Image (tube, rainbow, N blue to C red; front, side, top):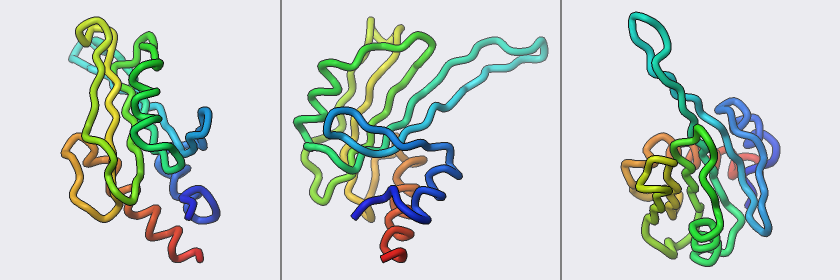
Length: 137
């Protein structure tokens, strides 16, 4: 089952995601901007990338990301959510230069199950997209 076609793609687009692929991995991603403001205006700005990956090789691809992905200027977090039928690995985190250059977080998620609080914004989207994909069949 793919989360990318028909009404599902409209759903992902609505939430700011675009199709994404790298090697054998497939899914969607979005860039989120965080702005810190004060009474005098903008104090700081940073970005986060969210990747939802439903076509992958489980633990192998998670390790590949952790070992090869590099920090991106002005990007604080790169989160990868691997959609799986059975979770194949626990949450994994990598810091770049003690966290000063950002983080990579890799999560395994089985749709419809309890999720890690750090993905509370992504897991419900996956569940809804799955529901839409099933209704399209």
